[in-house]
Amino acid sequence: MSRYLVAGGAGYVGSVVAARLIAAGHDVTVLDDLTTGVLEAVPDKADFVVGGVTQAAAVLDAGYAGVLHFAASSQVAESVRDPEKYWRNNVVGSLELITAMRRARVDTLVFSSTAAVYGEPDQVPITEDARTSPTSPYGATKLAVDHLITGEAAAHGLAAVSLRYFNVAGAHAGRGERHHPESHLIPLLLQVALGQRSHIDVYGDDYPTRDGTCVRDYIHVADLAEAHLLALEAARPGEHLICNLGNGEGFTVREVIDSVRRVTGHVIPEIVRPRRPGDPAVLIASADRARELLGWQPRRTDLDSIVADAYAFAREVTA
Image (tube, rainbow, N blue to C red; front, side, top):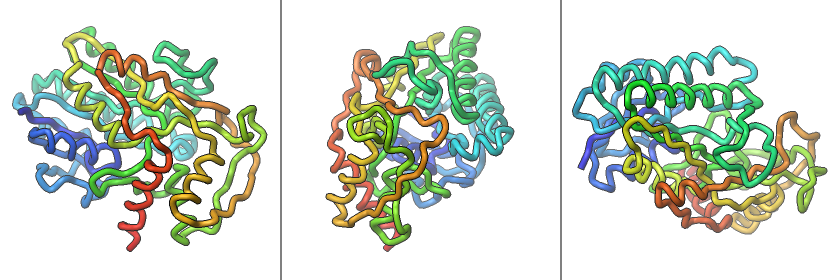
């Protein structure tokens, strides 16, 4: 078994991946400054170091087989208000992490990227060869890091895989979403069901979709985590592989609301608001490349099951 550094391993996806690595028999060190991460999410068997990616040089040595990089600021609206924070944390921080890896002779990287790099798609499903035109500084900084990694692989032989997530949801092994502020649809709906919010805002009901609301591709966090372990195996020196992660199917906002109503038994009042600028009508992934090159297959694709896992976690943390 191998030893891995999980940067941002106290966050939602990072903590689930860290737990899966440990379950597979690997040794894990989590590096997280707890700005947005949660200490309780760090697996008990992981070594934990408080710090950001700029402190990676003090942690990394040649004994690590690779790094999984989840450490980033990730709120789209905040990135519009404070783009400097996102360029500093996401791009400069990634550059310092990759530099520390090179100096420590750690040559494998799996990077947490995002579908936000594509912006408004020309066609769906979205493939990895689609035009990239992010509509927020968040998406722009993630795309910049992808370009950085491509150059590092070519120049220095880094073995790298970027995984571009679509809408991650659900919970696994007692770990789920805890964003502050919360901006994702399913956790917001669960806040309504748990009496923490009076209603859900629906931004636009006049899109050219089957019920007028936006369509998004939801992927269970446990399926997402499995892709990271497969990416470590697929990484090759001097290559930067980019793969989308999604189910290849979309659900409308109203279909997600109806799912939460079924699972929770709550009425979920909704208020229709005007469209938000930059919200594409449909975002659905083509994950054929991940299936072919990683051997990955999402298994938890039923929307009610995804919502049920998220609901169980939400009730646990609010009990």
